[in-house]
Length: 349
Image (cartoon, rainbow, N blue to C red; front, side):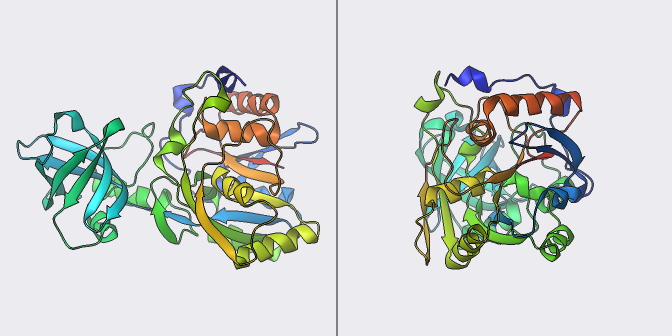
């Protein structure tokens, strides 16, 4: 399939810069796959379109405060994104302005009040704006980021370094059920859930299961090849435990639908398939779901509205059909839905 078929025009003012004031008050566009019908509603009414015995699969990854700032000895400011710790005290990061930084140069990581926190040394420059930093403190990476880090919002959400704004984003760019730290981007379909909504759905007979996929920076990258299938998708770490496998199998055995909350949960479930070991499994997935893919586990999906020409939009088109998805996006634009990470949601069922 030609990548250009995943394109659409979006007015910039529909790119959400803030979350809805209340999580469950986000708008919800329901796409009925058998008929193509579109229904406009609110996320807190999602239970109207689910059945007792359906199983919603959540991604319980927790987002690191991975965005940070640093200064060179000259005073020049740098902005970084923590990617991973390759070994204790050594970070792989993306660093804006890396071209100007010398190998072995000392820089100073700064806290959220712009004060010096600790020294770091650039020990290796890599392609794509990546480098290795040697961090001169014995604190673990999570503890450092907890003191210096900002939420790693995608670049289309404009943020500075105001610690008050960052504190609000740290609450809202995180699902209420997040528990396993490791993502550098949020599984945004889950941002609409409140604890009260989950409890209400459970009381109505909806089941919940959890997987973990630590979302990486590749999630936002556009497909750069002419043909979608020629693109090399990023890999991400995942895990699924025995309890989740049991809940999913029980739901399927009793006629319930498996509804993935987000593209990340979808990738985990389809990576595992129907023959997963009963004890659970962990690993990495590079599964690229494109139109024509035959789904093994997932019957429906909750998802946000995605950027054009991305692997995320290709996945949504695979489960609902490209023409129906593009028609739904046109409807959402006409009805002034809010798009992308802090935007509104779709239920494909």
